[in-house]
Length: 89
Image 1: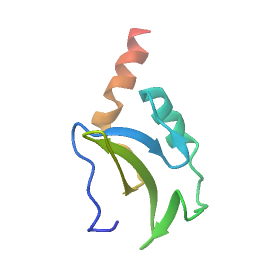
Image 2: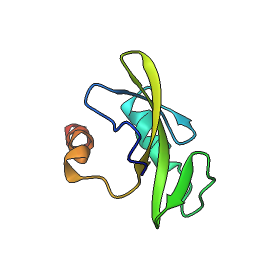
Image 3: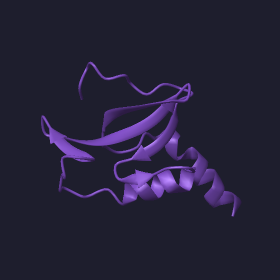
């Protein structure tokens, strides 16, 4: 996305992904699932250089910030908590 934007870092607290507010892991997953497919509305999801980007609002040190993040398949390590929960159930 825009190189002048501050990237997400460990310790940042996600507040919103696209149009969806986020207060828990479950809400994050639901918000990602609810993002428009190939349609970009330009305000929360856009297409730039052939890649889908989603607007992410986060807090760092209590200060609200926003950035655009590339949408793509999740890395396997991000699925580990969900898989562990599944097998524990």
